[in-house]
Length: 332
Ligand SMILES: NC(=O)c1ccc[n+]([C@@H]2O[C@H](COP(=O)([O-])OP(=O)(O)OC[C@H]3O[C@@H](n4cnc5c(N)ncnc54)[C@H](OP(=O)(O)O)[C@@H]3O)[C@@H](O)[C@H]2O)c1
Image 1 (cartoon, rainbow, N blue to C red):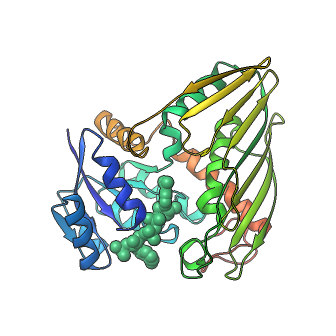
Image 2: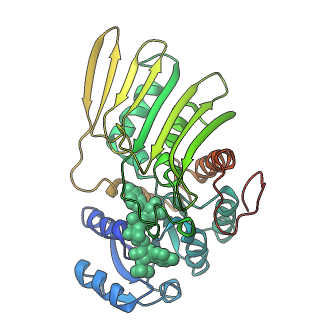
């Protein structure tokens, strides 16, 4: 079975997706949609894509497409995902899945109602290093994990129109980068039961540098940071009752895992060739081949929990996107 992919959007991540697809068996990109025919043509010519559309609805109507990769800014994810699900396409949607958990729930409901596959492109979870990490935790190599420290950030030049800073595109450090430390907390502890967050908001009103402390049932604690105006180590450390696991930079896509128990450090290499997005694509192919409608590695329940955590953090730091109501417990 060859999965016939469409791509919605022609920006940076859409190009990486095409590179990753070239490394994977069982799928090929057969169509691309852009808001402009010129950009659709440029992408299609660059990556050898046969059909190119100047609007996203035409891609949703293409009966020769099985699955669509949503590669648009965060603020477009809900509308684009609903459009493609409505056209009967399976959907792999970039992270963050949606601006908020209310949007995310609508997307999940639409996929369930239609019996169609849907997954957030949380590529970290499918990387070899994260599989090693999962095994180490399951084997209790560091005993009971008690503390996670993780950060991800860099200094981007301020540009009010760029999607990192533009509220209309869901800008801010939390949704773009903080989501990675948060998914690590989820892997170690599950969903938090208490959150305390603060942030520096910039000229456009989005969070530029953000920090949060998360408490989890059972007592697990996490300290996470995300930034678009200051460079960070981009590492992670999981401390347990019997040892420590470290993910070197970049913590969302490391190629090794270090475990220290009783002062002995073991370095476990987990390299991969080419773009690491290939592993999430392989997961989609595997799910479709087995006829299952969601991934067990990164299920939609986890996506919605993560979205709810980010809702709570944004509520505390005072970041609201256009169209979201004031004083909402969870943005609508
Ligand atoms: N997994 C990862 O490592 C990773 C890395 C980077 C980004 N991402 C995610 O991928 C998504 C896209 O990021 P990107 O870096 O590719 O962004 P980008 O370079 O700005 O590209 C986004 C594309 O979306 C399309 N688009 C549709 N509606 C738009 C609108 N109203 N405003 C702007 N663009 C619009 C545009 O394509 P057309 O003009 O052709 O329609 C644009 O090229 C984000 O959600 C981001 O979080 C993930």
